[in-house]
Length: 410
Image 1 (cartoon, rainbow, N blue to C red):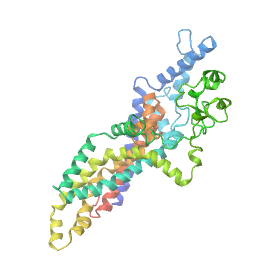
Image 2 (image 1 turned 120 degrees about the horizontal axis):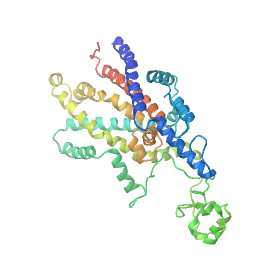
Image 3 (image 1 turned 120 degrees about the vertical axis):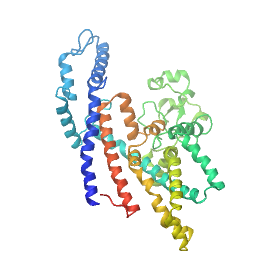
Image 4 (image 1 turned 90 degrees about the vertical axis):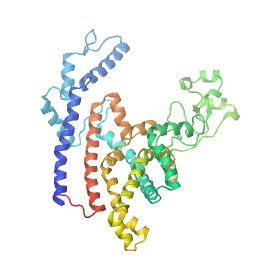
């Protein structure tokens, strides 16, 4: 068995090279590649600076075409001045040294962006994963034991409804119902933590002891340049130390929460994050709830019909012992099969759910990089996701051995 896992680890190397080679090839030959996107951004920046300065940049001719010198420089930056295999070898060598390049959108190293976003997706993913297995396994076991009963029929209706609703769709509906839409306002619209006071905000939004800017007389607003810039006056507040604050009617002054999220106590921060995680985690669980429950039920029912289960009953063992000591362990094998796929999804996050709830995690980073055609970030995310997938497959094989020691790999 040890030799098998050694071979699996060694097999990860050519598999990883094949995946990265394919992804790198796509970025080299796809229309609108890295160089074309860089030229487009450069032309836009130069045209804006030219309009502001009354002239055109020296790197562009009078027709807005980029100069040969600049084109050569861009090709050098993105490795298009070298043969394809040479450029791939250089890029792969940098990846192995955790140099994933520099983001064109964020102007930051890709590795720093991933390290910053990754923990957020891990928190949401692992929480959803643990809750999914904690709910689906007991529910699937109970449905198998009570097969054909009213409980089984009623829960099956709920399971099939959950199966027909994607998690991100449920998130949109729940936000409309519970997140300040047309009905209730009991959960936050998104994010990971509350933003209470931002004293450095130019618009004085969400400041303690504030009054609405719309409550001020128009003449008072005209006196202050910073208040003129406020577009959404219905949701903008001014600081109690602002000169215009005294002009607010006393009955219009409201009290807003004081302090930042980091100023809360440990338990307060826990409650605040948990409040924000409520709907996203529910959508994570909903996405895998139905399939895992049905898989657990069918697997256990199949094992309950095996000869070894009938033999255990014939020996006089109790139903509880037969189910939980004999049948259940073998029934968990199908759930371990898909763990490799689940592992990559758990850590990489769901980009649709993160988009709906504005969770600034790994999945949302990938989504935004694809939309913006930020190729260094896209390739970096593909590299990390590929490694997670390969590691997850090995974890699945290890779970086989833990669940059923009779399994031997050769």
